[in-house]
Length: 119
Ligand SMILES: [Zn+2]
Image (cartoon, rainbow, N blue to C red; front, side):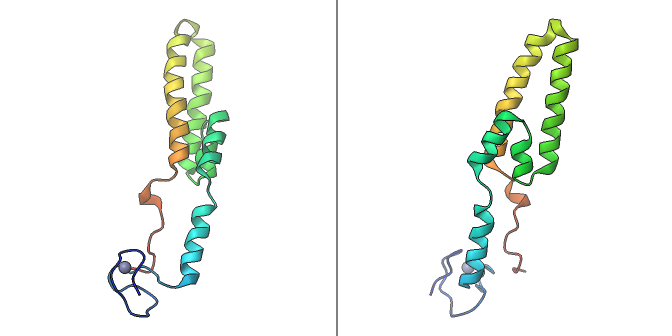
């Protein structure tokens, strides 16, 4: 059989000796379950309505809270600095679009739990 992570030929072992990838069906199913719990479309829609909500949904708590905070500050600035409201609004739209993309893309790979059994 072949490792479905690195493609090297391996014997009937629980973990690939080349990359440490688990070769058992059970582990592969678990991996897929974790990936399927998060829907990029749902995250994007949540952040469309409330910036940061999609990030929190995706497990990016810090980014989510930051985006909610920025939205509140931007709203207050537009109210109290009305001469600059258009300028702030344009900046906010850029932030808002980036926020939706960030929610859609999900957590960065460095935050992903990868091959916890590999050494
Ligand atoms: Zn491998």
